[in-house]
Length: 317
Image (cartoon, rainbow, N blue to C red; front, side, top):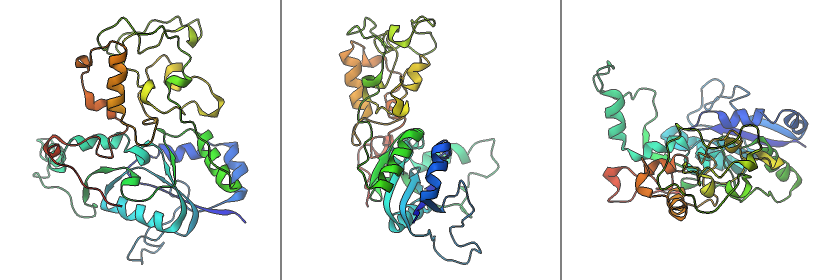
C-alpha cells in the first residue's frame, strides 16, 4: 500500500516545496508508492476543514511528514505541533526548518523594533498601529523546528537538493538508513589551495576573483585564500547533489554563502568562521558585519537582539 505523506510550510518562501517538484521523473516514479494526504503546494486542503467548520487545525494522519520553514507566530507553532502529532516520521525540510534560515535574521531585533520600523513610518497610514485582525501574534523570535517539536530527520539546504529529498524518501520506503553527506563545502571544493593566503583584510565581492574562465575550477585558487568571505569551511556540503560535482556557488566563481547551515547540526557558523579567517591570516576586525555569518543559522539563540543579550531567551519543546 502507498505510504501516506503530509507536507506543510511555515516561515519560508516555498523554495523547498519547489525542490520536491524538481524531483522530476524521480517524483513520477515515486508517486505510485506515495499518497499525499496534505500538501498545500499541490492540492487544496484547508486547515479547518474544507467548509471551515472545525475549531482547530486538523491535518490527516501520515507516516511521513515534510515540514519546511521555521516557527515565527502562533499559527506556525500550532501547525508544527499538529504535524508532529499526526506524522510518524517528521523531516525538517530546508535550512529555515533546521536552523532558522534567512527569516531568523530578524532575531537581531525585538518585535517592538520590528513594529516600529514597519508600522510607524511616514509612508504608512496605520498611525503606528500594528495589525491584529486576522493576523497570528508573533512569537518573541524565529525558532528552528527542533526548538519547539521533536525532529527525526534533518534535510538542510536553501533549498535542499532534490537528490537528497529522493534519498530520504526512498530510504524510508525501503526501511533503510538514510545516508546524507556530513562534509564541509571545502571538502568537496576542487579549487586549488596553497596554504595561508597573503591577504590580510576581507575583500568585498565587488571585485572579480583571480581565475581563468577558460580553465577548470581546479585551476582557480581558493577564494578564501584570495581574501573573499567564503563560508565553505563551516558549511555543510550538499548543494551539488549526489553526483559529487563542484559546489554550485564555487562553480560560478562565487564564494559560498553558507545556505546549508553548519556542518554539524549543533555547529556555530559564526565562531567556526572566525577561526577559519584567523587561520588564513585575515584580520577579523575587517568583517563589516559579524552577525551576517549567521545569515542562514540564526535560530537556537545564535542571534539575539541587543536588548536581550544580557539575558537568555527560553525555548520549550
